[in-house]
Length: 360
Image (cartoon, rainbow, N blue to C red):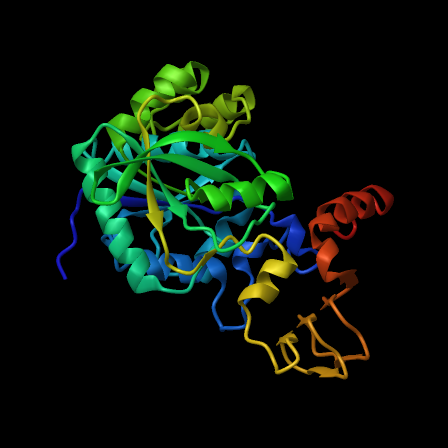
């Protein structure tokens, strides 16, 4: 299949994924873990998916400088010039601006899809079909396009996108509002209105459109990166200086919520951001009693609605329990109520403070 050489993908792979603690840690974050038990890490699955959409050499991975070797280990075929290293974590807007700089040095006419490295997509064929529609629209419209997921439940852990009911073209609509994680009552009303979608954090735009928007809405970031030359001998030194001055801000808050021409393509391709242990339970194969057992030597007796994840050679057995998450890692055992899994981040913070970073 011939692929368009003007089409590019940016994979954002700098996050830590603290809600998947204790398996996901700062030194070995979620995107490098075989969290689904398939034999492939999430970042490897994501990279492979995009080889069906754009030329392999047009896939860039942006990650923290500490994860350079991990990226090469998991994706050995990628050229080092396609691994963009951030000096520090500054959220998604600087990450995208930096990747834009690298792509612009190669092809100013690029149309780009931006996606996280650690999401689950069950129907890759539908995803590729959807992505092609989005890229075609972005090529011919000066818009910023995001993929919105048709919600299946009133989930309070996702951001929501409200859209106008008047179709622009190809099933694409203009965005009205963005709402961060709502209360349950509000989430229920969103579903009932049929005007809201989950925000998947997957974006499509031309390089020119996103560059213009960054210049307009985030002039400080624009100026910091405009002074960088990726081919200059002192590039890495200057990048360190720019990142030290760069504000930490998300592309959603910095750009998408402010721009005048933001559009959304309602999508269905079996998406999950795999943000929590419960979300992993949701998408995992289960036994007749709704237990998900991931990893070797995991067993459940007289138990239901539980997740067991074993990252060790130990035998892990649950018996007579309901609605638990049990995670066995090399030096930490986590047991938490399945309905309280959003609190893992708070737990990690407390452990980090008490043990001075020993277990983070």
